[in-house]
Length: 371
Image (cartoon, rainbow, N blue to C red; front, side):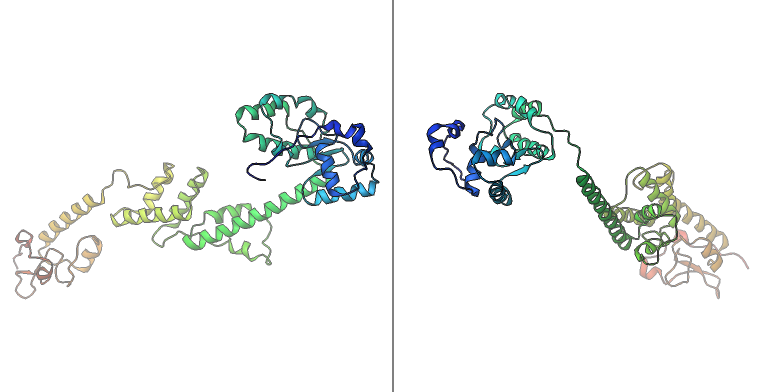
């Protein structure tokens, strides 16, 4: 449509005028029928909606029924008009664009004509098209339309019900396929079994069909997204998130794994951290309450130093294994304090690791026991 269309007004009563009727009749054609549909005596106050049957319009034009049907097929094939001949209703979709109501009162005047239109699927389509066009006029126009032209209550036909059921089945199948594909992508990228559990619960209780490999694939044993994360603790956390409707995305899993790795580096037990979140219904992971790994490590080191001073000799392998968090000598000569007892002289000797990591602390020098 042009930005500045040029309009001409035509009176509907022209079709009944004596001089007009004396002219040679319109020959059967698509253009003649289109002109008749826009301006004919069957038109009403609601733009684009005509209540008339094909036989009545063919008789009004003086055409044979076959000629009328052929002309209407031309109009229909271009989407210019749609008809429900059983309900005797015709709709011109673009008529409302050229005949927008000038005020809400004009729409209010459509109340009775709208009620006289037969209830059918085409009327419902016309309702949607009219409402969409009027929506752009403002809230007052829309309220007037909803009051004057209520939405038709149309029950779908048997064919429409069958088509609807078929479409729903196709949508359901497509949705299931997309869920399985998405679950496989997440499972491969992060190892998370959240989607796998949903698929297993949705599967039938019968034995899986060997011709469906994707279902057999989803029956793998659950695992965590990293080897250092306990499987039971992780799956418990994932199940808790699902029940709280807070399912994990691929990005969410990577962020939680990163936070767990930071907590693990600070000395926290990953399984206890996950169990704490599961127990308290937390969607994220946090340091354990009442537990400070740094302070505990310092206390452990101090206890070991006291033990080393009491023994007065380097720690044996069993003692080192019992306290794995104590700093060890890179050369394997001292207990980490940079001092050791020379076995030959039985005197405190500074370890060679002190030359690389810093001078030994005289206060850490072990005492010598008498022979």
